[in-house]
Length: 68
Image (cartoon, rainbow, N blue to C red):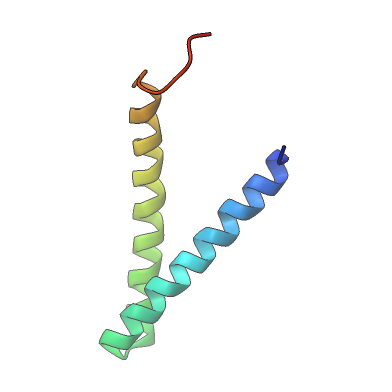
């Protein structure tokens, strides 16, 4: 079983990786570092908040869970 610390490091490292991909795509299309950073940062914040909301919605759904 994975530790909480390992899961946290995996989540943070994935978020950094995913944000760098968004940054690279934005830079490819805009050719501007500043705009690419803004797009990458905005996407990271938005995706984090949306994922939190997504998790909260799924927490309220009983489908696929085992009764305690």
